[in-house]
Length: 305
Image 1 (tube, one colour):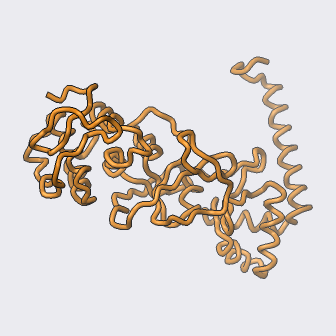
Image 2 (image 1 turned 120 degrees about the horizontal axis):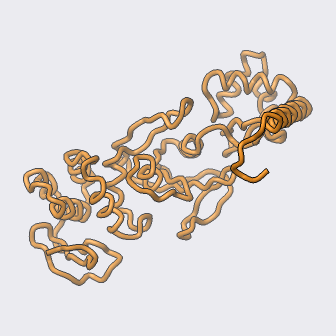
Image 3 (image 1 turned 180 degrees about the vertical axis):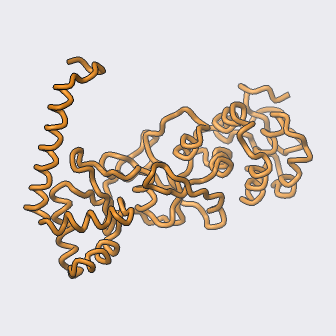
């Protein structure tokens, strides 16, 4: 049968039988490596919505079965060996699907569990809000911490370090506490509620973190295509709150170019830094000097008259 061809009744029946056999096989392995009490512990954790859980949470649930902390630690080791859970980092685990043996939890849920506190941001946030059609190959998050988890390390396609859990890469960008705002808890599915930067806060980083986004063209294209979906007052307030003069310049210049009335941009003028800065720091600083926003218009691809 070719891919994409619908299953016959017999084929579907055979598939369901195979899945049932696989499930029973895994349960038998769990009984051998984790024993039935381990399955009961996972069921209890699932019951409280803990698809990603800490050792402390497992110990707390295990107390209901009169399990000692050392017994719970041993069970977790055995359950991981049997493929029923994945060790995300030391002290954090994700419950696996019994057939596929990959975590049931959404990757965002695993990401925010790796470093606490953290929030889905940058490319992942933009993609979630529909502000980019690019599908990120790495889950991107912002965190207050520069100490990262003890999981596998690899480089992103751009050569930045990323951490890997079950073949999914996670990149953490450290930010200052004063810039940890604009967080919107959202449900990514019926089980996982995740902190994520809202549209305007995610967009703001495209005017600032060029090592992630490459150039200002990302911000310009998003605003050209989605200006009607953006709360301009909120974006302006965020750009003023972050207190980075060059960011305020770029945001103000871009919004004015797209026809936002100057009166709505006034909060940005109070935080403009001295001197003229290139709109795109990755390009040669050559172009017209804009006296209103103190920027060098070095974007040849855009009408900056």
